[in-house]
Length: 186
Image (cartoon, rainbow, N blue to C red; front, side, top):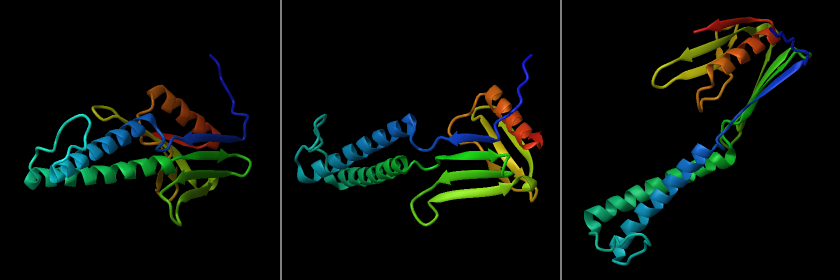
């Protein structure tokens, strides 16, 4: 059996933001779908085929064409939102646990504006425990939380995909040992 002692005074773990392959796939699918619906509706209005894959100039504009233009506009706007979210990398950040300064720094990126960057700093004295929430089933959730003395729970892990049980357990144990605090489970 191997035991390890954390000799590094700083632990930093990164949180993946919106720049994931699944988000790029969905942004592409929604954008192409929205553009297709929009061009189909416009084709039905002008009675000219604007699509390569099908001929929608024969569709009557009222009511089918109007509905296609509406869905195409909504899909295109949603696609633009998804692309901007990916471009800005919303949710990216890191958790830093520094023994020398006795500080925990949680950094995240948000939407552009005056509060684009969220940086929370806590002293080790403010921290009560690390909480591990595990919910199995159809929609499993495995998350780590930083529990403070004033009953706040700050999430330390992302919300994208559930982490393997052994990885989240070892990460929780490593953090609790590094901070010299309790480990809770729920």
